[in-house]
Length: 399
Ligand SMILES: [Zn+2]
Image (spheres, protein in one colour):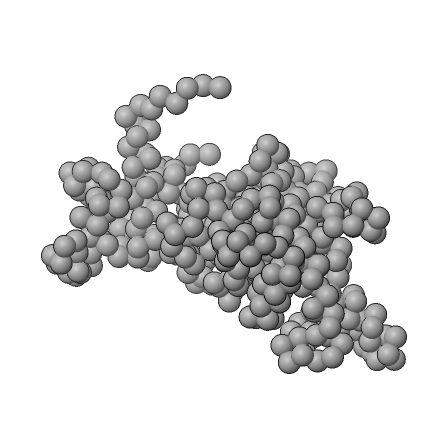
């Protein structure tokens, strides 16, 4: 491994990135605030902010309450000039949106897969949507594309495994980048989810290890530790959905037996409800969205299967707690639409199975965003890429 000596240009780039992240976190702050939070000298802050202003990347606001009660000129990211594209690829649909540097969704396109989910069909459709949005914002500067994909996703190779047929043969990273005029950054949807929550949903200084558990048609965890995503050797850390909770259980699409996803995903929940209803002579089959209200209102069949799902999920969460010892666990994706009953059930279940001391240290709550955190996180992947590669703000092509 190389030693980490840093040249002046590298340090300057790191300082720029740090200030951009602080501006994103703080919304508006003064130069003195930035100096205090970053530990950089006021003169360094002034130089960097002058560059940012000349690139139209930040703008000055009126006077705000500054350090030690002194009023000072506020600075914020300019949300009118630069944009990014966020893409959420799911098992049944994809959505493509244009976002500001503060992660606000401005416009989106949503497409469901009708019959064909081959990469050769789906990827050109995603690229068409991206190009349409770029063309619509022709007078603005669109910087990068961030994509959140279902896992297991091998980060370095850009390959998704065991989600759709034929996808493990191709690098989605190379296919999406092909012919695209912007850099494309791809990550697992749970990693995108944790990034959105830690960038826009909470104060990251309050937590050391945050886990975002995406509970949808699949289950995966994004792990944010000491300011960055923890990926592991091949990039699949957090694939808790394919950790077994029953070695004699059904064979999962990943090859393992009794995976958590087979018991606690929204598909497993839906299948159990539909089986019970069929046994009781009811039809037609219900979709997950049909189960939200009955679960909230404690409808007999749906509520009892919801509780079963939560018991399975709680076993997975206990495994997560013992593996990563997080101080915050956020439940997101489809299942979070049922609302507060989800964390309530989980907390009750794990209180029956864990030592109180361990439990007290792990806060469990719902995702901060009503709109899917992974979609917002896809945009944050692109924003973060631009914050690291600030040449993009000067219009330089760097890929
Ligand atoms: Zn599996």
